[in-house]
Image (cartoon, rainbow, N blue to C red; front, side):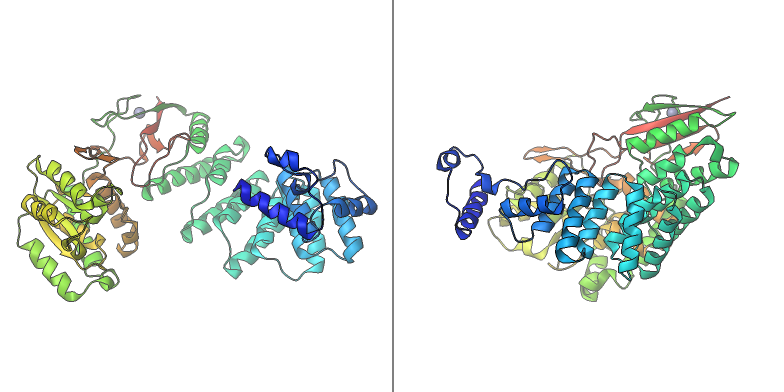
Length: 504
Ligand SMILES: [Zn+2]
């Protein structure tokens, strides 16, 4: 990398006819002067000053862009940036849209509300419409000024144009709540929920952090409904939002809530208050509702089996239904790929033989290409695999998730499945929110995960007996949250909880 940068610099020097004056320093690995980053002044310059600086610089092409980009990076004082724009205007007779937007970024970055308003007025006079980037900057910048309502108008325009993002909504919610317009803040929130968008955490936080004067019973009910939304959609707040939620509960007038950060025992009890956390297990009734929905929605659904043939589907159903129920269904390809460097068939065989040691009935879903002997797929391994487990080999292009789901759910509520995949795609196939909730609960309770793999050392993460989801009683809230310093993969659940108890 260093060499190529240097080479680029020297080529440029040659093309500009500049002599290499510092051979000694380059040999020592120093950056030669004329490939140094652009020089930016430390105070505003007049046009002459900028002209001279431009002449001295080593980049005549795209000089203006580079200066503005440099200013963004260095977070240069606005007065200096303004002096530069004056220079550009004098030289070119005008300032282009592109340069104005870059200047706008600088204003927003520095929270310079008055300047954002000025740029907004200038650009509105000069241009008929703005691109998404500029509109988003105006929403953010204006939202923090007395002219914040104009940011709501821009949001409206973007919404009509279909280019609005959750970030835009978040900035408007923050603007509304920052200006004591709680009804508007919640109208925007509702609009997002309707459009299946999730409000970014900083905006949710602004709702929980809002001044007490704004909060009446209705407001509090709205905040509680956000927690219900978390529950229904398996959302876990991050640590920063969790702290706002904790402070909010603790400051509800005339109710005496106390929050503690805690964990849950393997047996499913909160370590802070000893309350029993909801079980992960579905009731027989819930299970049969889910089973029917999965089989109807996912298995008979038209889209799901686009990648299979009716013959393959029939053969699979016959195969599964003619055998006793399984205890574990294994996503063969997914498990084999756990060890990228190893021999795939060996990894799969190793994992399945360990599972078999627990006297489990196992189904391995594989692909037909596994049956073709190769370095990665050794014939003898596959033969032994078939002694340990029932194996069904799908066509190479078939989508294996629906087969995995069918085989697991058809085997009964005790049957688990092993894959690192998420199965999120199937949410759309499930008819309503309640069934989706059951599905993801079933998934959390039945999906086996192998956090790491080394040959001969197969350790599965045990399925928890309790459900990791926001839950409440009349006098308690338990909210799983993500710690800022813990990276959680998407198929894992947080281990840290906020326990809130209402003292009587
Ligand atoms: Zn508790």
